[in-house]
Structure formats: C-alpha cells, structure tokens
Amino acid sequence: MLPEKIICLFFPYKLVVVLDRVVWLYLWETMPGYEYGDYEENVDIPYRRVLVTGATGLLGRAVYKEFQNNAWHALGCGYRRAQPRFLRCNLTDEDAVRAVIQDFQPHVIVHCAAERRPDVVEHHTEAALNLNVHASGTLAKEAAGIFLIYISTDYVFDGRNPPYGENDAPNPLNVYGKSKLEGEREVLRHSPGAAVLRVPILYGEVERVDESAVTVLWDKVQEGAESCSVEHCQQRFPTYVNDVARVCRQMAERRLQDPSIQGIFHYSGKEQMTKYEMACAIADAFNLPSSHLIPMTEQPAGTGAQRPQNAQLECSRLELLGLGVEPIPFKTAVRDSLWPFLYDKRWRQTVFH
Image (cartoon, rainbow, N blue to C red):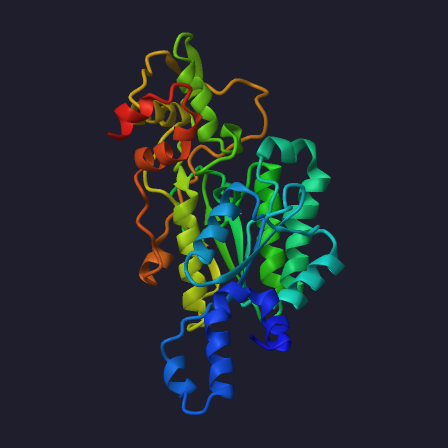
C-alpha cells in the first residue's frame, strides 16, 4: 500500500495520471536493486499546466480538449455554466483571479472568455467592457512570468481594405471591436510577453445552434418548406474552433522553447463566404435542398451593430514560424458540428455512408 503522504501529495494533480510513477518511486525507495533512474527516461507525465478561461464557451471547450488530449494538465474556468465540470471563477474579481493563478501555477493561460456578441455589447456596454477589457488587464497583471494568449477578433478592422496583416492599423466599427482592441492593449501593456491571436467568425461543436453565428443558420436550412432571406453582403471567413485550438497549443508548446513567440498573430479559415453561401454549403453538406434560401444583398437599416464588409486576416506570421494549421474544409467541419441537430436522423445514413 502507498504511504498516505504520497497519496495526499499527488491527489490534487491527478493521481490517476501519475499513479504509475508514484508506484515505481515507492518500489525504488523500499526495494533494493530497482534502478529508478533508468525507468524515468521512459515516463511521460503531463508536467505542463494550462489555464483556459471561458472553458464553457464554444472556443474554450475546444481549447481545453485540445490541450488535455495532448499531454497537458488543463484547468478550465467559467462562470454561469462552470460547475460541475469546470472551476467557477468571476474574472472581474481580482482576488479570485489571483487565487486561481497562485493555486494552479499554470505555465500557459489561454484567455477565451469574452462577450463576443456585437449586438449584445452595443446594449450592455458596461458589462462587456468589464469582461473584455478590465478582466483581461487584471489577468495579464496577475500572469506575470506566465505565457498568456489573448483571443481577439477580426472586428478590430473596418473591412475597407483587406487583407489585414498583424501590423496594419486597427479601426473598429462597433463597440465590440473597440472593446477587444482595448483588451489587446491592456494585455500587452501589463504583459509585454503575451500573444494576441485574432480570429474571425467561429463555429464548431455547439451545445445549441445559436451558440455560433454560423451554426444558427441551421434552422433556416432545415425549414425547407418556407422561403427565407439570408444576408449576402458581408464577406466572412468561417473558422473551425478545433483548428484555432491546435494553433493555441502549438503556440504554447513553441513558446516554452522560444521566448520570441509574443505579440500579435492572425489565424483564419481560408474559404470566403457570405452567410447565404454558408447556408447553401451547410445544406449541401447534408444533402438538403437550398432553393428556399433567398440571398439578401442589402443590409436592412437598424439591424444591430455595424459589421465590417470584409475583414480578411492575412496569417503569414504563424505560417512563417511553422505554426499555421491547414483548416479542415468547411463542409466537413460543419457536418461534424451539426449532425446531432438533424430533425430526421435517417439523414445520417445518406450523408455519412
């Protein structure tokens, strides 16, 4: 039986993961003739720790899973939907943030938590600024000596002269874009060694179809019997959260070896589409009709926050560093994301076989 003190020491750091090594340590200490040093070379224990904020959200879930599946000890935190899977933490509470960082002592923090809905930010500006700006600054201050990746947006640009490189001047059109740009500046001011990763419109394995501005189109696709209008004005680059998560992990792993991994980076899907074109692609991915979808080529007045016409991100910095990820094709990824929401599950047989 293992000594109680060893169990107590390792339990908070996933006893299941390290149990094999604990057993061998104990055997080596109590049984003459065992050469622990020879065995240690073959042991692969997740010593790297990553804290993922917003782990209950669309991107945060993917980032948490990516690190956890690749030999990282991951701790996810959230707020309203945190428990029981993740740690509940109010990021606007400096003491709570400090306690989490001091207790867990992460090597890397991926800051996914944000109010990312532009129309909500327009109407609930103070709460959005508290999370997108002030909480980000607090996190950066408390993360001294820890590599912080701050997730930002293509909406820091006005969309009038794409594509946009990392050094191009931002000019956000809406409060959401302004709040994320201010968040970038706060993070880099308090933590100059941090990285900012700007990404465009995201989609992935959603808990509800309205969790993403891409997958929310699913309801219009499945309506079928009645015609409906879909926006066909703004050029977008839908980006799969699993691809973004891989980029975050690769940046983190490289940074542990190379301190020059800091500053602003861009990552984006490569397929350019309006929302109408996304809806048609979704229909095609599931062998569903799309003739009921009507392209709307003019944006109606009073439809919420202003969006950039085309904020395409130029992603050469990641690619030059060998950190780029080839995006999974849109139809493949969106099918993986939405098939649980099929009304008629028999469609799975025609789509996947």
